[in-house]
Length: 96
Image (cartoon, rainbow, N blue to C red; front, side):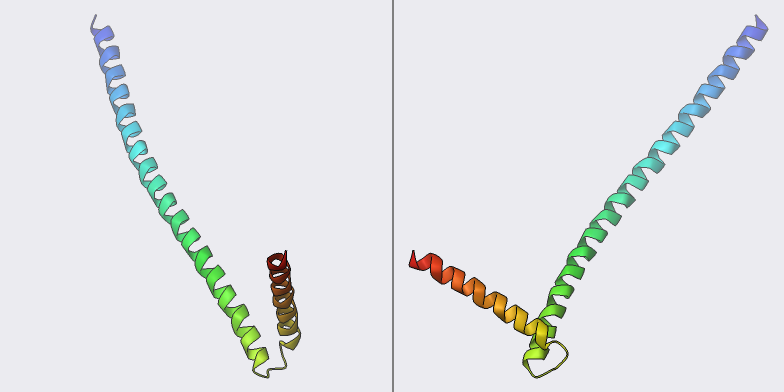
């Protein structure tokens, strides 16, 4: 009988340790999930910021070319032509 009690006690001890390890791992998992969510939000925010800066950079390049910079004249001409086509399209739609 004594050996059975020892086995049961050992089994209870092991189960208790496993439950404690499970609780610790669940806490770590929850913490890592929160960190992942925070990192994902930061990544999305930074992606939006990059897009904003790229748009500003393109606008600045076009403005510089319109001010006489030779570097981006072709791009400025293409952008102006695109804008003119869009305006013509809008006028055509209004005329209908």
